[in-house]
Image (cartoon, rainbow, N blue to C red):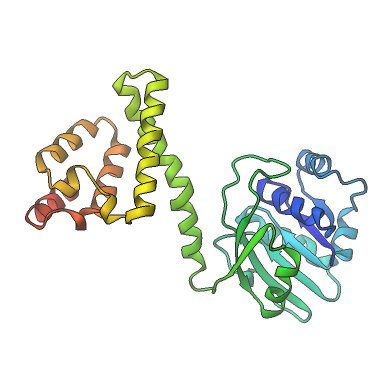
Length: 275
């Protein structure tokens, strides 16, 4: 099995590293020449085939482009696709069926459930979870390509696939957004950076440990779970100078409002909607 990588970004290079480690990587391609040159250097590819040979001679093509570019990249490649071919992409949202079907064409979506903020070769993370969806024949060969030592493969269905992608957004990007919000508020405290970071990291770690140990409901503390109407009104008043933080406060509070004392829940619901 020889695999050609189309798209040499952060996800693509990470996946290519493991493929090369198992001697499965035929070569790489990126329409951006700088990205292509960087990939060849980082992956230590001595002889990278030209684009046409890469498409023709690969048993499988792995499209690791941005979602909006997957079909464009496929249509560019399909002119040179001959005989049996496996088509994989790394989109968390799009199904394997985004690729047109055909005789001897087997499709799968291989979505690594991880965050890739930087290109690091070799990757620091030793094992990834892959959510796999697609044609039966394509799904069958994936475990042979992505070894158990480096990947944990979980098969999912087409209908629930978008929720797995949303799960990643909420588990990663929105955590970053929340920390950014914390930083904005932290600047108003006038704490020195070292004290601020120590305090915030400590409470974040405590919260995550509590969630792991007790679950979400039993990990809550603060004004919502106490039903502290006056405090919440004051918070919202202060946050009017930060419209985005104000809206996030209301939205996140509404999610956990079900844990507020019943006698104050309706009042809080009105306050969080009205504001």
